[in-house]
Length: 379
Ligand code: COI
Image: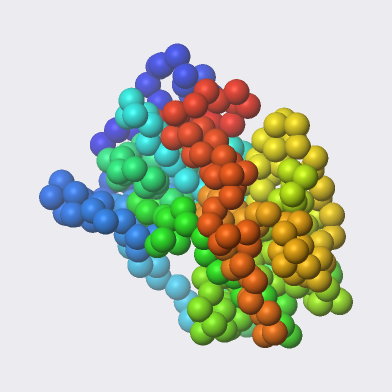
């Protein structure tokens, strides 16, 4: 088993920090065989296959973070009274490891995920995991399970860090014991259709988040709240649900698990502003930078459903797309609600959406120079 420390290479300066040595590697006694791994890496779906190991650390109010380790992937032993099972004190992140043509493995802006994880922890009254530990866990797991990083086109190793309240206690207060875990899933595209337009259902009467709530945090509860309206979306032939603001049901906010952008005929780019109820996506932030540097007008602002409907109907809005780590950039071809069914443009992916998809994925897979310094080498 290779140690979780990078060998000396010209690109490894930030990998040799002491933090990369803090996750002790305890190799699985039952790693899958080469044949089993090859089989598991064939025809990858999203989030259904998991690697041989997981990274882990434990926090207690008395000791802080300890027991940083990488161990065999497997079921957790949890007391039925564990607070997370009752009060949903839990947060998570999503990022990917990309295999480049030369075999090296890279992450895209993982320090932003570390910062958001810390912000989510604060909102959910969980302990913050230091950035160095977050990054070290990724380095350690990527080294340990490097053979699980797929190289088939468009596939990645999806990384899922999460943290939950593990104290056995039924009183409602922040847990005094917490587990941090990082699991990894070799994955294909989030939408089985890949880069092709999806339909969106605009939810009525259901909201993902309200003012002062947890909408800006990446916590399981937000996603639990999205499941029933997401089911309604599916019942109406749509791939994703779009939520309006809870206070007025006027403004579009975000989709069940991704942010949303609108392109107008003048080439300007619009996305809902960060109002406290929207998750700040790493992909959203990166796209804002790319389009601004491309000389486009950028508007982070409240966007009403009425103007989107009107703009799509009269052609002022030429493109709509979703974005996120899992979704990357996904064109939206149809917008539906209880009393409307609108096709965006001619229903196919527009040029701005396609350019952004290509730009981002070329950068992430090492087919384009990393002018922004966004990529971090893992292996
Ligand atoms: C991501 O894009 O990584 C997400 O977390 C969205 C979804 C898979 C929950």
